[in-house]
Figure 1 (tube, rainbow, N blue to C red):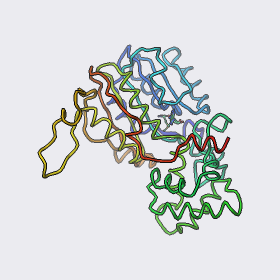
Figure 2: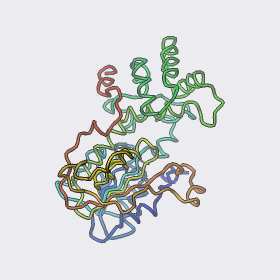
Figure 3: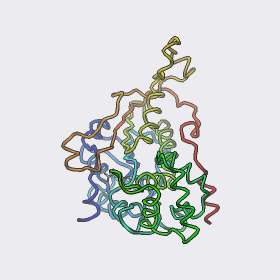
Figure 4: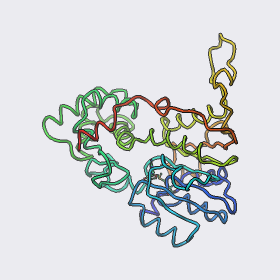
Amino acid sequence: MSSAASHIPVLMNEVLAALKPANGEVYIDGTFGAGGYTAHILQAADCCVIGLDRDPNVAPHVDAIRGEFGVRFTFVEAEFSKLDKVTNGELVDGIVLDIGVSSMQLDQDKRGFSFMRDGPLDMRMAGNASDAGASAYDAIKHLSRNDLQQIFKAYGEERRARRCADFIVRAREDAPIETTLQLANVLAQALGSGGKRHPATKVFQALRIFVNDELGELVRALLAAERILKPGGRLVVVSFHSLEDRIVKAFLRKRSGEVRGGSRHLPPQSASEEYGDNAPSFTLPKRSGVAPKEAELAANPRARSARLRCGVRTDAPIWPSEVEDMLPRVPDLDNLRKLSS
Ligand SMILES: C[S@@+](CC[C@H](N)C(=O)[O-])C[C@H]1O[C@@H](n2cnc3c(N)ncnc32)[C@H](O)[C@@H]1O
């Protein structure tokens, strides 16, 4: 099976229903991957798509979509946090993000994403070129016990983060931890291997999120979407775990003027008390997230944790925002870059 065939687009019908492709409109697919979403959007209407991906390995899929759809498709190798820099200032009608790793990335041993496959401990979505930033190997080699613990807790929600960090620090004193299976074995020693999930699951997730700055990317992309969507433009985000979904949910609910549930003992706060002069910059067609249906799960079990959320841009000005306010506190990735360079 080719790698393109091995990535099944998740929640495809629901994405199209939320994005509503129409003739003459322009969309950004911020997570091009194997081009599944892009192809379906271009088939649904006589529209244009600008695809973005930070992974240079998507090139064959870019060529295939270009071959099929010609000038209606353009591609930019870039992080989706920069999605408002790719249109020369033109506003767009819709943005779709399908956050996370692709099956092509997970299934390639040499990318080092999977604890089930032996490969170099890498996990960088931007590939392994020298300018692709610090890798999971660098993090495991250089970070202090406290930093590792904090990352495993914040990004993996690993209850025994301290124990995992202790075992890693002890193991790396004996010999460098260079491969995915070496790290998976250390974690199996730390946590035992009796549970339903592989003991390395949460730490691998945490390292991947850390080295790719995935949550920072997501927050900056949401803010960029607020800047670049036309009034009436649709923002559609599919996420795969609760850390991401929480950020998208909080952003959209806040921007739609929804007031957080306060204390039962206090009078309810109004939107103007909570948000001052900021008028809602999004409306929400659905308040809750959309999950895959049984039939999709039967065909593609990897879709099980996917959630789709959608917002429609109003004509209100953008809100002032601090990226850091929307993120968990973790060690500085730039610091690791310095340690490992
Ligand atoms: C789940 S796949 C997308 C699959 C795609 N929807 C399809 O149907 O083929 C996620 C893709 O987003 C890319 N990606 C993840 N984070 C990114 C970021 N911050 N900036 C740009 N691309 C990113 C990954 O490299 C990967 O190719």
